[in-house]
Length: 361
Image (tube, rainbow, N blue to C red):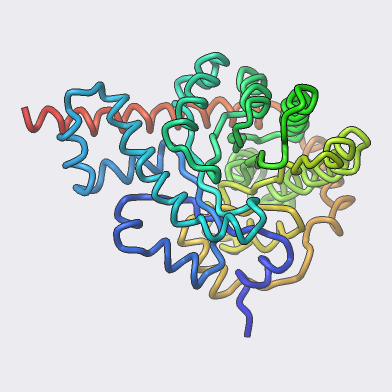
């Protein structure tokens, strides 16, 4: 009998793992997930690398062999080596899926989230260092990140846009992607090998909004999924627009919505809700291994759980507004907090590397 991971994959959801480490690569647990659990991609972020490098001795030799470099350059070497190896592991998936999946993401330094030029520069640098076609450069969806997205796409670099919380910002991300594709088409350059995903964060929205609702409110646990459903409706509208169809006709690939932050934070909620209630074609769901396992074990498949719920989701968002919930302010605050958390993880990663170098001095 097919498990939920297989069923959602058949329904058009690309299952990605939100984790990467040298330990995982060495133990071949990622290979196992690829071969047995329908995993067709990997996402990383500064927090993931801070945990991986800070908690494993597998990186120590590399760090000490490169201690003449700056801490930033050592981190670049460690992370790009892991991501390149993961890209190679996904090569067959990449080719078998028409280059849409088999993707591995690496994020630009989160300290550049408010600096367009530095984001572009490091995005290009990471693309060149890793030198794999199935790489995605992660760029935060800040106001300053939007023009960086367009520029990287225009230069032929595939992008994962991260830290999207609001539908309004998501529409700007779609426009930024379209601008990059359009610029490339107008320069008579191929767009067929450019791919992109837009990472829309889920669980943090419920955590933030539930904290502002009474314990007995029927709206608790509704906001995140309703918000994502509204984002998917915006995706379909964009996909069906004349503007996009003209680009698709010359080989452009649609930017897929990716559901991120899908591990459930509230223990009273079903642990599979941010996966099984967000099933639709042309989507990606990146999940921690704990969520992957619980979906495999107990996920209940109900087919497409997004498109039948457009009206209901719009109604829930309206009810939240009537209850005094300012979702625009909350999602903006979450963006600020998301950038700050990744900056904090990056600084912790720098400290970990610095401690190892000093310990050998």
